[in-house]
Image (cartoon, helix red, strand yellow):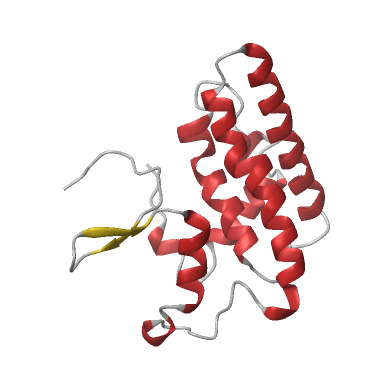
Length: 169
C-alpha cells in the first residue's frame, strides 16, 4: 500500500512477504538467468559470455563514478568532499557521453547490464539526486535537448518489455 516514491531496489518474495535481496547488481544478475523458466524472452542475455570482460570493467567505473557517486554527493558533509564527489560523478558522465557518441550502448551495440546500471541512476538523477542543483542531466547535459544521456535514456525506454515498467510523473 506504499504510495510515495521508490528509490531503492528490492526483490520481494510475495509468498513469504520478505525481502530476498536489496543489492541492485545481484538482483540484475538474478533476473538475467534465474527466472528464464517464466521469461517471455529467456534467450535475452544482459551478460553475454563474449562481452563479460568489458561489462565487468564498465560496471566497475559506472558503480564507482555514477551509481555510488550520486550517493557520495548526497552524504558529503563538507564542501570539499562534495566537490570531489561531484567532479568524480560528472567525469564518469563525461566518459559515458564520449562512449555513447561512438556506439549505441556502453559495451557496443548490444544492451547489457552495464546499460541497465547506468539507466537506473539516470532515470532517478534529476528527480531524486540533483533536483535542487539546477543541473538536469537527462535533458540538458552537457549542452542541449538531445544530449547523449537523454538519447541513451530513450533508447533504453524503447527496448521491448521495459517501456511499460517505467513510470515517471
